[in-house]
Image 1: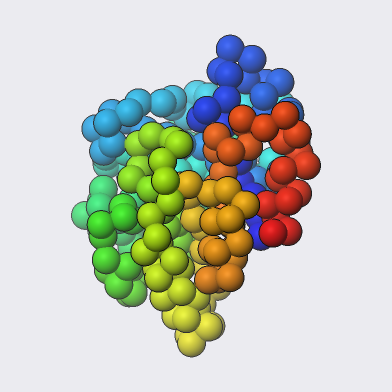
Image 2 (image 1 turned 120 degrees about the horizontal axis):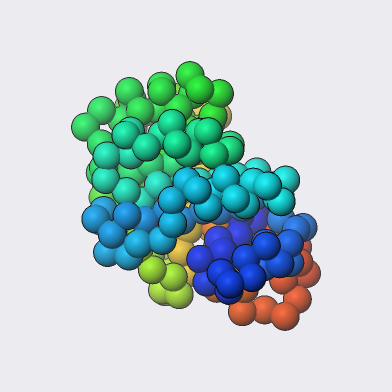
Length: 212
């Protein structure tokens, strides 16, 4: 699997050294929250651009915001390689997917834990990634929601049946145990936050998670 560390629980007063401490990770996950779609507020495209100045990782940007279509240009220009938005936050998801892809950025979509996975069925042929939230979006350190496994299996079966090309990403409550469970269900990318940043051997742990 690909490990995409979320640095939300890192020390932002020394963010550059925190990011460099996980340089073995090929991807880097950005949790963008606006205080409206979810209760918490994090940062904007400006921080994405700042990190771009010293990180060569693949920028995996997750927009947990209302009306994401109004901010896509900012995140594209800031250096996003992949932009994931929420199905619940837009009126026309296909239009948003097309706009992202037409700007040479990969397009992902996510759903909240209470949203039924089959609402994405008609969009699956067009997506580069589907992000399953295995916790309620908005804060870190939550416990893994068990029925997330069923959603991963559903997406994996759809992908195999129709030869779709999207990656399956899982975010929330990931540790060595849950990483193994999601891998067995068909997951390709794991977002891991506090479990990595609370460790003294971060790069070693990333290797363990990728090969669990």
